[in-house]
Every structure is written in C-alpha cells, then in structure tokens.
Length: 192
Ligand code: ADP
Image (cartoon, rainbow, N blue to C red; front, side):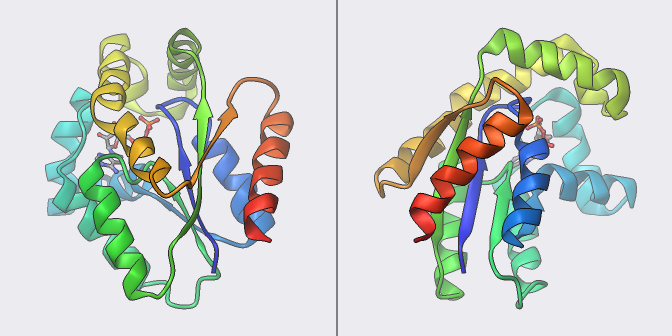
C-alpha cells in the first residue's frame, strides 16, 4: 500500500492533480471537501453542522472530519492506497490519521506540498467561482478567510510530517502537465 497526502493552500490545484494521480497510481481519492459537500447535498446532520463553518471559510471541527475519514477508510478495505486531499488540516487530524493508518498496518508514504503565491490563489479561486457552483469561491472575503485558516492552522501540518522526513515541496505554478510530471517523479523516488 502506498498512501499520499496532497497538501497545499485552497486553490493550489489539489483537486486537478488528485484526479490525475488516482488514475495513474490506482489510489482511492479521499477529499474531505468533497465528502463534506456530499453530506451537505444529502442534508445530513453532519452536513448541516459543517455548512456553517464552510460558508464562513472556517475549518470544520476535527472530530467531524476525523470521523468521516475513519468511516471512509473502513468502507474501502481493498484499496491499494489512499490519496488524501484537503486532509489532514490540523495537527490533531494528522495524529488521528497516523493512528488510523497504523491500525491498517500502513502509513503515509509521502506528503506532496504544492506551493503557489497568495495573489495567484485568489485569482484562481475567484475564477473557479464563476463555474464551480461553490459559494465559498465567489466571495473574496471568504477566500481570504480560507487562506488565513490555512496559514494559521494548516501550514503547521507540514512541520509535523517534516519530522518524519515525509515532505516534498513541488511548485504549483506552471502547466497542469508540468506539475503532474514533477509530482510523479517525486512519487517514483519514494515508492521504490
Ligand atoms: P479548498 O481547499 O479549495 O478551500 P476544500 O474542498 O478542500 O476546498 O474545502 C472546503 C471547505 O471544507 C474548507 O474551507 C473547510 O471549511 C472544510 N474542510 C475541508 N476539509 C477539511 C478538514 N480536513 N478539516 C476541517 N475543515 C475542512
């Protein structure tokens, strides 16, 4: 099993690159953002609780997303590996993920951290908001709040995995194919 965390601020291209990576490496894609949006669409109690935080650009409470990831891991016992996208976003989530993977006798193989400047992020997110149907992409204030949440709460997650020498920074600007090529070459180095 080879498990990857695709890391980076909102708008850094995690969703786009995830699609390409799961197809190349046959991984199960676990995006907490997508899982939360399905819960909201299905109007579940979890979705209703999460929506208030998401609309403001704030992180959803740890226990909510950890529970969701734990169920998703259990629901996919035959997966060849997982690609975590948008998770973990806090140190508590990282510790919980490590424990969950340990129970499955596996671990994180690599954290790939996409790097993009803030002005480029805002530009991409506003642009995505024109077609994504995501209300959190149309309001610049909410976008800036998400980036601020990333800087104050999520950026430290990379320090957590650095302790285990698992982090590789990859430039998130350039063409989709160039970035994908760089991600694959880093995965290749760690898989062998
Ligand atoms: P983006 O990273 O582009 O903002 P996501 O789809 O990953 O988009 O996340 C959308 C929102 O869902 C976040 O702003 C946050 O409110 C919530 N969310 C997603 N993943 C997590 C997580 N691991 N922990 C807490 N909140 C999360």
